[in-house]
Length: 345
Image (cartoon, rainbow, N blue to C red; front, top):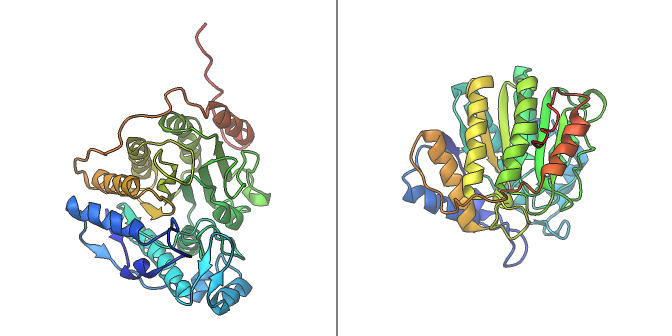
């Protein structure tokens, strides 16, 4: 697995002390990867240029961000004079990870700050300024003209990515998230628009959803749709804030549950995409859980043994079953999805 990282990601600061999106997130990942012997062969990106940013963001927004100076953009998102430059390095890291995974047909992982999936075409929000995954996907598609899939695993809905690709048939967007929760978007009824009908897939999960629910969601929705769509590459907007330990949500994935999902995504990438898959870091605010999941994913991709610290399975009764079936109902006009299994008589 290729690792993409830039030391300037540590220079990005949000508002006051105690903000959850803090440099210590990447420092915790680095320490754990070093201890495991995985902190090596890092790729350092350059900044993304205007032409690539403008594939997904509007010029007026970029001008406003560049001229903003310092202060609260919104209640969650703080801008400093250096913020736009570091955000361009984060988007550049996503682009480097995607390009490298495409070229070498091996997994890549970009350890990014700031995150990106809440950034819409015309505004920053939710700790995000530029939509890293969307920029990388749009650039790759412009060059290769092949279908791509973005799977967003995060406690929060990837509203910005959805907004950017809502009318696209070429870039499939699948999001698992707690609902209702910030930013309040992403019900199962949102399935895409125009030519993109059916190419937005929302798994809007209730609080308490964990390993059992996510495994069922993969079986019932994610894998069947990916198999029918047959993307040339998988991009994974990876937030570890769906973890049971995370302070910003109420989903309950264990580290082992995350690694199960990673194993299945890697297997699908090997089968459908020639091994092309890139993980792009989004949220995740419990430092131990964040480092546990990321180190496990690197070990998994490199074929190294790894025992996660938080391995007890969660959600054995699958509290999100009804939410998953709602997604099946609204996606049924677009994809061949099996009916819900009936309980034995």
